[in-house]
Length: 287
Image (spheres, rainbow, N blue to C red):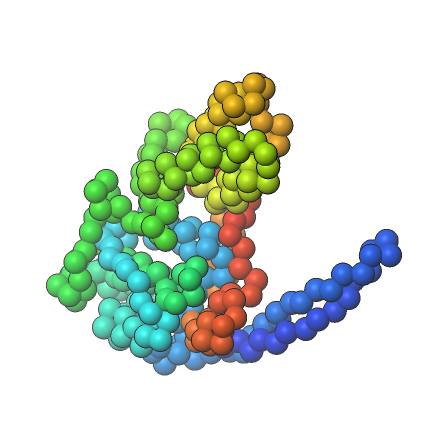
């Protein structure tokens, strides 16, 4: 089966003039060639957007990939690791092959990788459905439905089931309690520093940069209450004037965009940004 997977990248600088203001921009362009998915390890791909990975994991868990394992793999070993996962756990199977395995009572596996902020390695999440599978004996599997064994991403977000409007229970992402407490502490410290409001602007920007999953949006509302409450206590004003009155946007389920793992590794080894056009958050529909 062929798909878009092998990329060539190039950089270009150009000038943009607007109202007599000249600005220089640098951009990365990616050219795509077909890739042979029949060769193990060649076509392992990485999500372009962090939110895209979180959406994809959520979708898989929602259809039964509830057993999981994960960790961190160094950038120098990640390609060999991905190849081994494909060879041993068959994480590269097509949709039709997965259906056949399920009919035989066998489990299916999926692997997700994303470069860490320190650029020294990759976070990985391995998922497994119910049924027989070699990974069940080889890995220490956890149950995503157990509150003590939730899937975590970047030690900051966790996947769990929450009751939505209408009483339906759905999977969503939210901040871990530790991440929520750290964000609240940063907000209080920024507001109490009255000699410079740049830190206040920064914590507000951090809030609105978080992915708009339903669980995160609920927590964001709580953090905004912390902000306004601390502002009222410290500044003697009803609310912080820097906060937008517009609600946080939903995460929209869009087409998943990826690029080859080999391309990401090459960029990291050369000291470049792992994914040239990565964005931390996107707006969209409920999740």
